Image: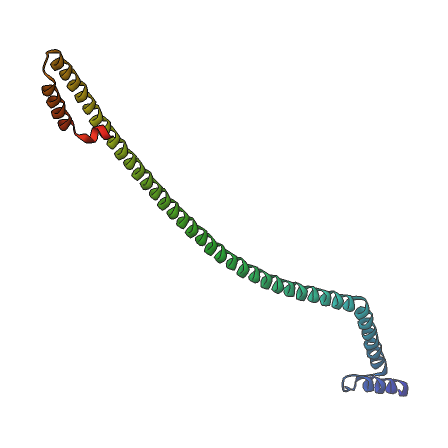
Length: 186
C-alpha cells in the first residue's frame, strides 16, 4: 500500500488549493502570451496604427487648412462686400450728382430758350411796330399825294374856268396850308 498511499498522498497534494493555482507552465504561458501580445501590438502599430495615425493627422491638417482657407475666403468676401457697398454708395452719389447737373443744365437751357423766345418776340413786336409806323407814314403820304392830285385837278379846273390869278394863288395857298408844309419837306 505504500505505492497506493503515495499515490493518494500525491493526489491529495495535487488537490491542495493553491493561491491562483500558479505553476511554472502557467507563468511561462502567460509571459509568452504577454510577449506575443506586445509583439502583435508593435507589428499592428507599425502596420496599422501608424498609417491610421498618419491618415488621421493628414485629415486633421487638411481640415485645418480648409477651415483657414474658408476663414480667409470669408474675410475676403466680407472685404469685397464692403468694397462693393462703398462703390454702390459712390455710384449713387455720382448718379445723383449727374442728375443734379443735368437738371441744372436743363433749367439753364430752359431759361435760355425762354430768354431767346422773349428776345425774338420783342424783336418781332418792334419790327411790327416799325412796319406799322412805316405803313402809317406811307398811308399818310399816300393821302397827301391824293390830296395834292385832287388839289391840282381842282386848280386845273379853276384855271380852265378862267379865274384870275389872284384867286388861283389864294386857292393853292389854302390847299398847301391844309396839307401842311411837312409833307413837301419829306
